[in-house]
Image (cartoon, rainbow, N blue to C red; front, side, top):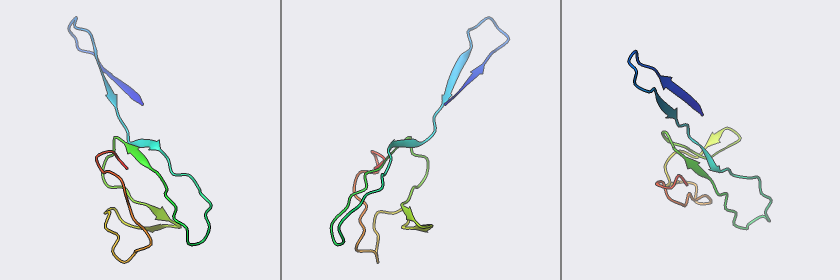
Length: 83
């Protein structure tokens, strides 16, 4: 995080503004599973700025939860919670 200070030419105290960046609250971890079993990869982003998406081997599933054409995948959770 970066703190930015603004100092005026008057005798007033300076103001500090904190810059907030998006970051992982819960970062997905590698998992091993039996073929055909269900796997959930939890992920939560704090202070989300713009769309996010899942990718694997440079292939992106897109930024919308409806994964038409990819019935094996589902994006569950809450956009409001950054999940």
